[in-house]
Length: 115
Image (cartoon, rainbow, N blue to C red; front, top):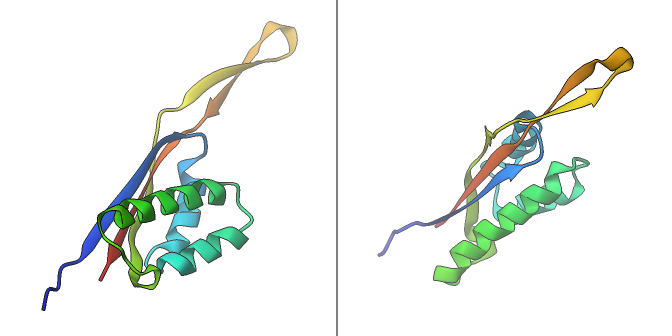
């Protein structure tokens, strides 16, 4: 009996969203099956969900490239967001002043496993 576990991952870098907003969504799908997580993401009201669906699909297709795997057997073992570089911009204000604006970015990683 061969008891090897097939693993795959997808990493997306420099996404123009906050690490904290992405982490909030990723914590909810961690540990779920692929199909259940995808369904959850479709009905969540957050902007990040569209991006995370693309990353999840990419990880799934990375796994599917090697072997044909059933969707029900795939589970999300890790889903996290790391902080990326901050884009620094300035907004002009009254009397010649400038107000700094920080635009955060993040790197999202999703790891899948099939039994």
